[in-house]
Length: 286
Image (cartoon, rainbow, N blue to C red; front, side, top):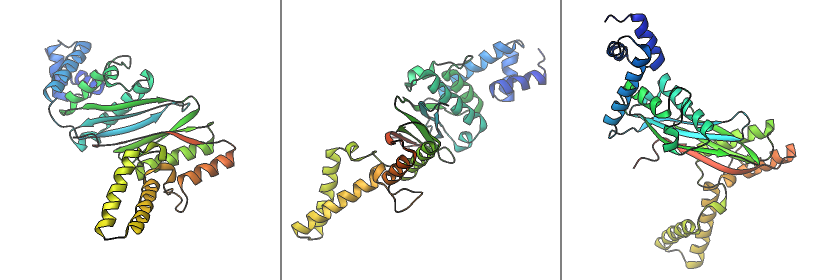
């Protein structure tokens, strides 16, 4: 049967699939619009299966908080090329999936793939864009957080290759939100491994001490001097890797802890970093 260009365009706008794919879907469905959508979904699922062994190392990371800032989500969706990652359709997909993480209150991937936006599940959304861009598209990881005694802020770096979110305890205020956003940016920029010293294992510090001690011995340092060197380097390790001890990127000469204390004093609200999460594209590749 003859398929009108107007109907093909309508299906393309609805699904994001290519023009030829839309035309074939309508032909195979005898012009039935809803059946054509289902046809494309099935085609997308089959395409996803075929591409399952291909490597998806590009993509987008997005962090987002609810309007009340009591809940927050962070998501990584991968594709094969940066060209696709920068496309509007891929950005829309990532935004939609992040919203569904907040809606479902779950970061479990198996659960998320079955969550629906009212018309399509996450798996169907992924299958559709897979068919449209002819690349493997994969929901790599996701996390959901809720706060009982604080609020969330996030920072999405330009290009969406790295993002972070932090939870601050205390009441939401304008200055508190600015602080939270600044601390989130700090997490992206300086990549701390822990909020404070309590989050770094004794085993990790012991391993660092062993490295520093070996270096000192290789330099023929006396034992008493070597011990001082080791202690100084361990101290520096803490300062470089604990968020609260890092030099604040926006105000050199001050630590993150100094800034948090200053805002707490100014607002009369005691702020403290309770949760810190950072996703960077490619860090989970093996």
